[in-house]
Structures are given as C-alpha cells and as structure tokens.
Image (cartoon, rainbow, N blue to C red):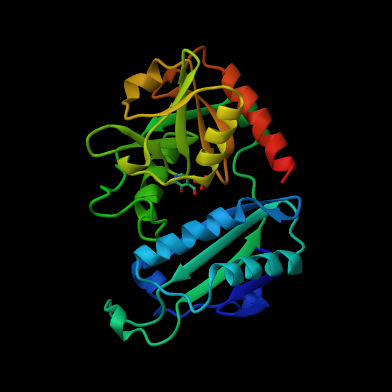
Length: 287
Ligand SMILES: Cc1ncc(COP(=O)(O)O)c(C=O)c1O
C-alpha cells in the first residue's frame, strides 16, 4: 500500500488508517467498491467508475454526504499525494457503524476508504501465451437475489469461492455460469469469444458486472470494424470458438486459450485478440 489513505474525509498515513470492528462492511459485507487503474498518473475512466459506485450506493440506499465530483477530486488528490503513475486505486464504501444488522441504527456517515497500490495481476508471458481457465462449480448470484450490477462487497464471496476453486487446479481464472448453465463471467473479468469474425459477450441482465473495460473493448472493436453481439451462450460456444479473451480493470485484455482442458481455436491467442490488445494499449496511452 502507498503512503497515504483517504479515510472518512481525511488523508491519513496508511498505517493509521483503521476501521471499526462494528463497521457494516466488516460485519456483513454491506457496502460497495471500485477498483480503478491509473496509467501515467491519470485514473482510467474515473468518471465511469465513480458513476458506477454511486449507482451501486443508490441501489443499496447508502447516501454519501458529498457528490461525485468531490469524490473524484479526493481520488485525484490521493493519487497526487502518493505520486501514483501506473497503479491501482481501491475505493471502498460501507454503510457505516453499528453492531446489529438494522441500518436505522447507524448514526454517522458511511465509511469511505480510498487507497492506492501497485498492481500486476498476471505475468507478461500470460498475455503472450494466454490463460488456462476452468469452469467452477460456484455459480454467479441470481440477479433476483443479488443484483450483479451492484458492485457490492458481499457479492464477492461467490467470486472468492470461485477463485479458490480455480486456484486449487492451478488455473489462471475460473469461469462462472448462471444457475441455468449459461456463461456469465470469470471471477474478476468479463468474457468474450470470436467466431467467424464476429465477437460475442453475455448481456448484462444475465448476472454479470457491467465491466468498464468490457464497454471500452466493445467500443474499440466497433472502431476496428469488428461486429460485437451481446448474446446468451453456453460453454459449447467457447469450446468451439476461434478465439476468446477476458477483460477487466486488473487483467486489462488477456487471451483465454484453454477452457476445461479443451484448446480454444489453435490454443494460441487469436488475431482479433492480438489486434485488440494493441488497440487497448494505444488507447490507454492516449488517456
Ligand atoms: C466479477 C467481475 N466481472 C467483471 C469485472 C470487470 O469489470 P471492470 O472492467 O469494470 O473492471 C470485474 C472487475 O471489476 C469483476 O469483479
């Protein structure tokens, strides 16, 4: 973690940034968060991340005492204080402090923590050779139970369980399905595949996070003249795809070359994926 942290309206040294044991985020996973990348000192898609955070908070009935512009300004100030160039910004908001689960007993403001750190999720070789992925038993939450478009703390228990399953068999990522068995997303990334020159990705209503990298990639593919279609599909479509890749703030764009011990296409990163990775890097370089 870098030197300074933003905590409840103040910039404090990281080692002094403490949260109550009665914090609802700690007790119940009651809150929302964002992970943001910084490229050459600028937070990537900052407005989109702050918008998504405020949408999550609105859906959860968590009200912050200040607006989005102030929130974004706090992030920018912290980045300056920590002299962040290329790194990761973690934003966490919880409902506040009380022991019982009833939110009406929370007297103060929500807890807000912002920190910055270094980030390198996968080694460079994995971007060149591609990721091996397995389907995990843990399903994404049913949207009628836990709306996946809320980037809530509690929802990530499923993703952590799924990640452990993937780790246990040495896979780079775990593919999560819906209850009905449709392809949803990976534990921290959205998924795409290409077939006959068209790129497909699951629709948001299926129970996935509407990834900010996902949208960036959909726009870049369209600019590249590649058609992108949101559709419901099963693992069969991935097994028989020409190529596949994952997208996320941390992972950026990474090829997926094997799923459940079946090579995807020829088992190497595909041409559209390679062009997209290049386009993504030049796009972030211009930010
Ligand atoms: C479950 C899940 N899906 C997809 C993503 C990708 O979203 P984004 O591109 O906004 O980081 C993430 C990462 O935040 C995630 O946790």
